[in-house]
Length: 126
Image 1 (cartoon, rainbow, N blue to C red):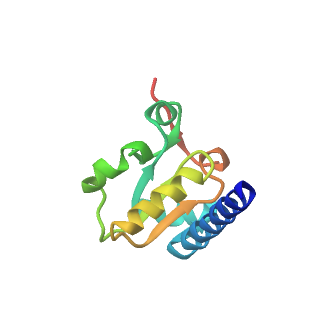
Image 2: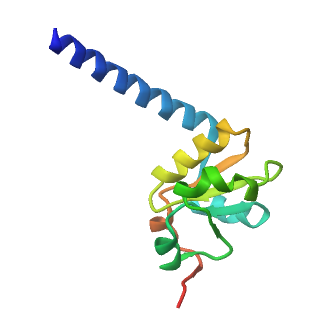
C-alpha cells in the first residue's frame, strides 16, 4: 500500500515538473547574449538575484528585484514594456517569469545561461 502512495507521489512530482517546464517554454523567450544585448536597453532589465549577488556584479543598467521580493514589488514592473530577466544560471529567472505571467505580464525574456555566461559590461558596488 505505501509503495503505491510513493509511486503516485513520484508520478505527480514528475508530471508537475514537466508541466512547469513546458509552461515556461511557452511564456518565456530564452535569448542568446547577442539577442539579449540588442533588446535590453529598450526593456525593463531585472536582476532577480539577491542583493549581495547583485552588489558583487551585475549587468549595467539592471534593477535588482530579487525573486524573494518580487511578489511585493510588482508595482515596479510595467506590463506594457518588455521584461528582460536574469539570475545566476536561469532557474530563478524562469520562476520569476512564471510568477509574472500569472499576474498578467507578457513579453518575458531571459538571458541564456544567466549572469555567469554574460561577457558584456558589468557594474560592481565598491
